[in-house]
Image (cartoon, rainbow, N blue to C red; front, side):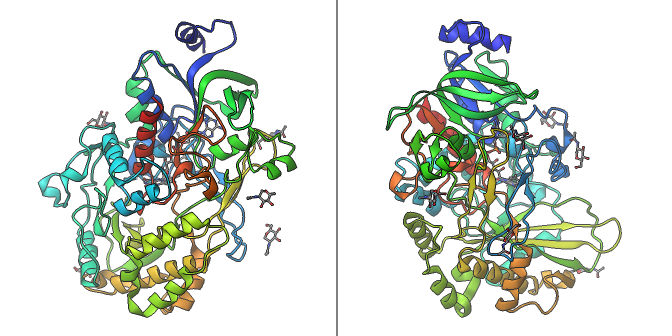
Amino acid sequence: MRASTRLACVLVGVCTARVQAFDYVIVGGGTAGLVVANRLTKDPLVSVMVLEAGGDGLGNTNISDVTLIGAAWGTQVDWQFPTEPLLHDGNRSSGTAPRGKVLGGSSAINGDVFDYGDAREYDEWLTLGNTGWNAQSIIAAGKKAEHFYAPKPSDDIDFTLTAHGLSGNIATSYNSAAPPIHDDVISSVVNAGGLRSADNAGGNVDGISHATNARLPLNSTRATAATGYYFPYSYRKNFQVTLNVVATKILWSSIASGSAVASGVEYVDEYGATHTISAKTVVLSAGAWGSPPILERSGVGNATFLKSLGIKSVVDLPGVGENLQEQTIAPMLWSLNASLPLNVITPFLLNMESLQKTLGSGNLATLESLLNVQPPSLSDALYNAHKSLYSKSVPWIEGYVSVSTPASGPSVLAWYPVNLHPLSRGSVHIVSTNGTAYPKIQYNFFDSPFDTYVLAAAVQRVQSIVSTPPLSGWIASPISPPAGVTSIQDLKAFVLENVATASHIMGTALMAPLKDGGVVDANLKVYGTKNVYVIDASVVPIEPAAHLQATVYALAGRAAELLS
Ligand SMILES: Cc1cc2nc3c(=O)[nH]c(=O)nc-3n(C[C@H](O)[C@H](O)[C@H](O)COP(=O)(O)OP(=O)(O)OC[C@H]3O[C@@H](n4cnc5c(N)ncnc54)[C@H](O)[C@@H]3O)c2cc1C
Ligand SMILES: *[C@@H]1O[C@H](CO)[C@@H](O)[C@H](O)[C@H]1NC(C)=O
Ligand SMILES: *[C@@H]1O[C@H](CO)[C@@H](O)[C@H](O)[C@H]1NC(C)=O
Ligand SMILES: *[C@@H]1O[C@H](CO)[C@@H](O)[C@H](O)[C@H]1NC(C)=O
Ligand SMILES: *[C@@H]1O[C@H](CO)[C@@H](O)[C@H](O)[C@H]1NC(C)=O
Ligand SMILES: *[C@@H]1O[C@H](CO)[C@@H](O)[C@H](O)[C@H]1NC(C)=O
Ligand SMILES: *[C@@H]1O[C@H](CO)[C@@H](O)[C@H](O)[C@H]1NC(C)=O
């Protein structure tokens, strides 16, 4: 802390013993926050302080070794967010949800897949009124983050070199240990009428292909925002990080209507002591469940709701904490005819299809009638965006495939079909003014019957792929759903009982025009403020048909350019 105080004196010219002043304070040293901090501190005259709730994670092999994916969940580097019972799902518990609480944020504990969305989805960001955000600018920013290591010819993996970035900070590569069954998965998708894609990167996600992972080739070391954007740059004197502190709220120097001015941030250290830090600009990068609560505690949010908690309104912004989007999964399992020589999760393959393709003519009419019902939680603008994606036959279904082998007995094939563009929207809101209490998270899955139907139909589609040769030859018996559960009606019940989450939460501080429930403008500045920004997954308006981190790296890189 002393070093940073001295630094602030030199750079900013504020030299009192206890006040620390920076050009930027960034709340959250996660996926987006460290990209922004890295880009800003390229200029040695710009001083940045990152406040991170977790530690540095160094030496924790649950983070660095990707063969241990999942081990970090439920440990001290995971926030373990409690979530509310699922309203439309028999009120069943959805338990706690993992989020990275460590330098690198969720990039340090995630499933490690690195993939881009479709150009048609990114173009929809612009159609929503977000000037400058489209397929061209977002994919270019993603490639700037990526350092792609091509597979060896002997790995026999198709790829398109030009679809990848070759000199960014995040290593991407393929797991070269793919077992032969993966080739049969691809063949069965094609034999069942699906598309084969050489590479889903580059803006066209139609078809099945091998997915890249955020890891160094050969030794399976994970690439995180911390390994890519902080550790190699920690020598920069203007790039300061304070660990194990929780930011609680924004401090204001003026709350003049229409342009509130932030003066810094209040935070609590690991001993419970409260501190403040001064900055010319405040950037919230605390994630889709972290950033909205900070805004609310600072008086930025639905004024009626904040009043009920005794919080004085600074900006009446009803979109804060609304629009929670999360992709839902219906896990499927089969036992295989043999015990394959594997004991780790093998690389994912992605199977992406439009609903038109997934459903064939039979179920399509029902689906379209459900699509024509706008769920109450979805704004007109976002509803129209989804209908537009549907009419353009944008892939709506994805599947991750893996094989695991227990200590004894046959191997198990897992296939996780995902509804990539759910219509239902949930929310995250504070429950009190307590700065370190968990917020209330309601996923609100299946608020739209369209979503239940999509997932049931996706399970049915995968059942038909798996019963197509050559993959069918490997199957001993279905485990889940059990044999005989094949009708849409039965599969809807299966989906409700078994729904899992993709951990791709987004949209809770939406980038959109104010009239459409937006929280930030196209520069990611919070409406009604002069110098407060949200830069993380909270602002993503439309889900990519992909995992989320590549999109978050892209948006953070582009946002940093807009800031500086
Ligand atoms: C279990 C899991 C699996 C996933 N799998 C994949 C995958 O395979 N591929 C993929 O592309 N994406 C995956 N994702 C999603 C992806 O990792 C996230 O979308 C992305 O990392 C989010 O970035 P972010 O910057 O918005 O938030 P984060 O990276 O979560 O960063 C938020 C940071 O803010 C800190 N913070 C929060 N509140 C405070 C506070 N009040 N004060 C100080 N610090 C605070 C947190 O500790 C954290 O470091 C997965 C996510 C999870 C959790
Ligand atoms: C790694 O994960 C395991 C399993 O979850 C856990 O028991 C162990 O404590 C973790 N290690 C660290 C350093 O957190
Ligand atoms: C759901 O559960 C909550 C508490 O867990 C309870 O208050 C509520 O009444 C339940 N709702 C229904 C419809 O069962
Ligand atoms: C993995 O390889 C990279 C570079 O190729 C190296 O920097 C890193 O230390 C290696 N990690 C381990 C655990 O061997
Ligand atoms: C604002 O909050 C109040 C009280 O919780 C709620 O009734 C109202 O619907 C909210 N307004 C919007 C636009 O979400
Ligand atoms: C605030 O919340 C934290 C975490 O739940 C809790 O430990 C603490 O006691 C709460 N503080 C107050 C003043 O209620
Ligand atoms: C399992 O099925 C595959 C694919 O049909 C076949 O090649 C293999 O020989 C079978 N293994 C056993 C042990 O039956």
